[in-house]
Image (tube, rainbow, N blue to C red):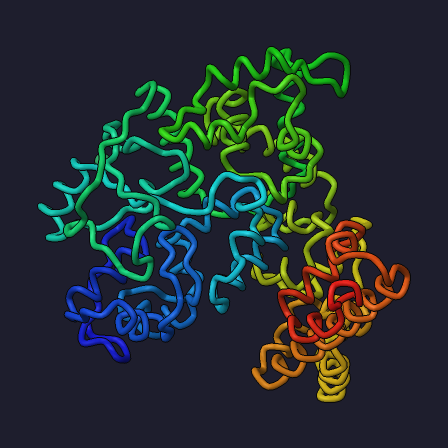
Length: 484
Ligand SMILES: [Zn+2]
């Protein structure tokens, strides 16, 4: 392969390979010793952490080497070399778009928190894993050993293809130098994982792999929930219409494929709890935003056996939708019908996905009774200027979008100009600072004799914020008792 900008040559991408792995092999082939210099040449940043599962800065990665490695676009790069398809599979479309936008342009700060991976305590770090038989096969057929992405899926401890236990390095977050790119050939200190039940582990690996391969289909949480409820009733896990027979279901889940080398991961599912855990309530309520794919996998395994069983259960809904939509052209599939009926998506988003015009989508939606918002057809110079003015004054982007009847992404596109972004950020910071300062002074004036510890107890947000962001001012404005 020819070299990219700043790179002598770009390694050939191996089918199934992680982006992280392609970066590591390219660094090795270009003989770049210093990890930060490598990151600069590969990603245009010396400080970015090259995440193995959910990398960011991908627009730069595509421009610098992705296109030379044979990828047609950033989306193609994301779909074939990262674990995003696995994580976005169950996400609503809008959320998926927000996550992928951060992957394209963001530095990765707070991405895993945004995706709920930190809040739901499933862990936000991956340990690099490989299968010995896959490694030998790649070495014979391809001449090198890549890290394969299906081996890095959460909770997977065996190779889905060979059914053999994987070998794992320590978690990326506990590595001493997280900016170092490690090739699978040079990896040392890997330990062989020991699944509790090989049969279950293979089932789980296959199910996880099929999610990754299926890519994002963006069905709404409601449709997943419907399919789950139907299957729960069918398998006698319900009492009445809305009550789950939790003890029976938890037994089935415990005995099922939720078999991971990492007991902590299974622990997060809280299967031994007396009541149905929060994740189950949110999946069945159609609010899956924060649910880890492992939660879905656990349910799918017990209720449908396979991913295709789960998808088939939803295609009944698709057929119902198709019947509802009048004037359907022969080219329309059930998937398109579902998109048209999904009011959480804008007409433009659906049009882009289906390859139809925005007005066709709007027309079909009106026929169906799906609300269509009247957005301006073009973003005029005048409109851009008013949006800029609002942003300069520090207004919240979603508020600005509502005010001007624009999509959030249009507002964020305008906000992407570095100068405007800096002004907006400074303004937001100043107004938060002023608000917290006022709040803090009010607290002191109400209780001038109180100690700092007491003030913090009765509402510590202002103290915490000011301690972190405005410490000099805070020190100059402590209660008089503290100062004396
Ligand atoms: Zn293998």
